[in-house]
Length: 273
Ligand SMILES: [Zn+2]
Image (tube, rainbow, N blue to C red; front, side):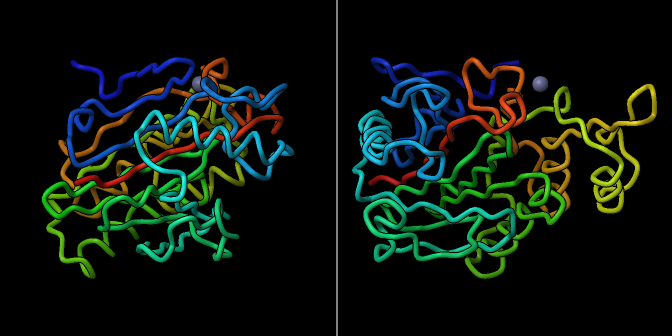
């Protein structure tokens, strides 16, 4: 089977894209790696978090580098305000620059979407699950940050529900990409967290007790896929990158691998003419 994702390198910058969207003239998108920025130490090099102790000028330069790679402008960016809840905002022209040119206007926005061109949506990650949404025929893009809390609270379902009920997009027209995040290999949790998952998803193969019966390994990609399918998204419209950020911490910032001493990755989406 063809890989659902592909790494693209432009000079020092390396990011990945979903192959089914790669050649879409109306969409620019990417998920960043550690490569292509100016930050140093444990933030090297492409840290996109303003809250990681980095110099602001470095972070801005890192955004500029990604923007240049994608062919979008810095002032078209709209940053989310991720706090592991499930609030979703529809973004318009007036929000451009939010969180990067102007102060972030939000207190709690883990999902953003738009149908306007030349707005660059950006969400942030370091092991949590990036959900990319795209309805090509309806010119709608969106992203949701699904950490374990967002996964259990079904933020993916919330985005689908808004697109379907408020934006009148048929479910079969919605495509979803599940980007790199911590995989079941590395997402080991204790019984308190596992119980929350078991309450939400029931007994399934993707919530697995280890051999000693003390810890659980949870497959967040499968959980989010199950949420999407339950919401009416067609299985063939869901792409899973299948890359564990913790196993590949030489390429991606991983919160768990570094016990929090890490930079921040970004997911970007822009609609183009
Ligand atoms: Zn792993």
